Figure (cartoon, rainbow over the protein chains, first blue to last red):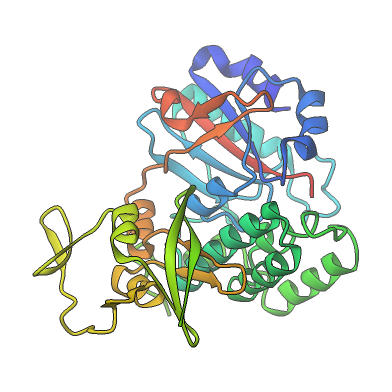
Length: 211
Length: 138
C-alpha cells in the first residue's frame, strides 16, 4: 500500500518511511520483498525509533512536515482493512484520504484516536528502554537467561508497551500469537487499554500529570 | 573486593571499562565512564562545557575505587539498567531532555539500515512530507 501511495504522491514531495521493529532483517524480509518498496524501508532491531518516538505498539504512524516538525503524533493506522476485525474497526480509507489531503493542501485531519501532542516519557518508561537495550545486548551475546530477566523487567516497568512485551516474544522463542499474547492482551485490557490518545490526555507536553 | 571488567552500552556505543566489585556495589573506572558520557570532573563538580552539576553532597559517587553508576544515573537524570552477573550496564537517554525534545515538536532524527545494509537518515528527507510507519512481523 505504501509503495502505491508513494507512486501516487511522490512527485508532490511525499515519502513514506517504513520501519520494522523486528529482531532481524530476516524477520522483516518477506514483508519487505513482497512490498518491493522504492521508498526507504528500514530495519530497527534495537527499537531506536520506538524509543525516540514513544511508540507503544504497531502499527503506528507519525506525520513529519517539510521542516522536520511532527504535525500528527503517533496513532494506530492501517494501509488496508485486512485487520479490521481485530483493530476495533479502524478503517484505512479515511486515513489514506487524510494523507492525500495533507500532501495536496497541508490540511492535517485528526480524530479521537490521534493525540494532541507527543506525551513526554516517564522515568519508568525510560528505564524500561534502558532495560530493553541491556536485554537485547545480552541476547545477542548468547546470554539468553540474563536477557529474559531484563526483557521481563522492561515489561514490568512499562506494562502497556507492546513493542517491549510482545516485541520480545519472538526473540525469546515465544509465539506472539500464543498464550503469552492472550495473557498480555488480558492484562492490557484490565488496566484500561492504554493508547496514544489516553497517554497524551494524561500527560501534558511539559510532563505534568493532568487531572 | 575484586577487579574485573564491565561492558557499558550507551546510545548504541559499547565500552569496555575496568570495574571494582565490593559486596553488591559495582564501581567502574571514573575517567573512561565520564569520557564516554561526555562529562569532565572539575572542582565545581561534573561539567559539560559551561554547565556543571555540583557533587560535593555526594561523597560516595566517586571514590578511589571508581564511580557508582547507579548514583551517577541519578545525578545526570539518566536511567541505568545493570546486570551484575553478566557484567553489563546500559545507560539510557536523559529523561528530561527526551521529554523536552518531544515537547518541542521536532521529529527526532535517526539513522537505520535497509535490507541491504544501506543506511538512511530521517534528516536527509528534509523538505518532504514524511509518513513514518512503524510495523513488525509479530
